[in-house]
Image (tube, rainbow, N blue to C red):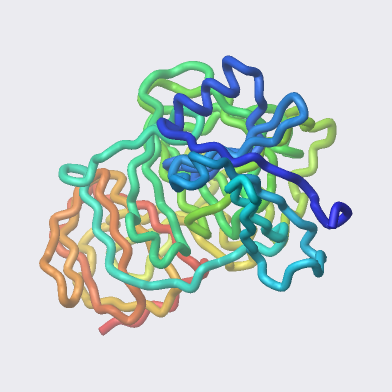
Length: 370
């Protein structure tokens, strides 16, 4: 059995979570290895002095009173048939035996209409690296997607580490302010301004270095709950510059709004035009990100799509959203919505300065006009 165990973690209750994690890392010198979920951390794995500790915010009473140890087996271990097995030591210590997970789990989607308004849904939670998170898809569509409105109220250096995410898809769009980032194999650090975005391919190492006061970004990822792992060995910038490197079938994308060579093209509904970020091409059409704006006399015709996921965030201006089976809603800057497949919807009362972010999976949306 010893040869099959990859690591052992002593599980500790961590409530309050942030204060407990800070105590072990800042006061005692443990290093952070894994933390999730990013928007509202509940589990962290830390290491130091020969110990691996798993801090769990919602640990049960038995683990608190008698202790718990988590043994992580190699994925090919045949010792136990189930992925998770629990045992109880004579002294009451719970032993949790789990197999190492190498395949990314993508939950089946549960499509639904999601509406979030800045005026009424502006609850902010302190998440990873001290950043504030506003949840734009509370139900997570069955755990398949997360969309977060993230802000950093105070500018300056960000308390981040070189890290990476176990994800299928992840993008970041800057709504307000600026942020300095650095990515593996993508050269020196650079600044993203309002209107810019990046595609973060699976497992790419990166770090948030500093930001302006009042930075706001939109982050969309699949799956909703995913590991953020710290890479303590990698130093950035990388020695090599490889802009076309393949990361699990995806390439890094940096879209700059100030690039005047990018063209505006007719959108799926007349009277609108869009600017493509290049993410569809870089992901082989797995996902797409574009900016849509009013181009004069927007159509009010009914639309429906057959996509896995279509998320829109209002950047400027306003519109009235009509979705079959739901009350009409006036949407303004900071509001967002997800319309499920096969549901009829349309836009009316679009202001001349209307502009919104659209994130979709797949990148090309098959849209039917009714």
